[in-house]
Length: 142
Image (cartoon, rainbow, N blue to C red):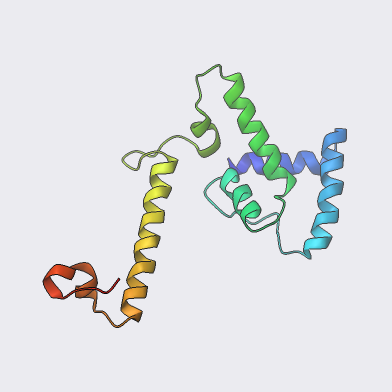
């Protein structure tokens, strides 16, 4: 999907339509305001959709090529007549034995949450054994 981002970027630079010219001019204003914080060439996330969501979560407008790529992927979904799922269109096909996008990222989120909890318990002075096996190696104060 990142190749599509590159293609959209080329189309924006060429400015063959009023929409592309407008988006590119708007980005120039935003880029000056952002002072280079949001770099167009950065690839944050596994997909352009994830990269755009990260920009939004951080309070930035995504670069126009990300938005145009998401639009393109959405068109693939709508024009497929039900043959392509929105998940496949935005995130690619499910990975074998890894589940769909939400399952993979939900599991990742749980691991991060567990790591944060572990760090908090260790900071309170508990041992790793107390944290992982509280009934066997002593109580945890929660």
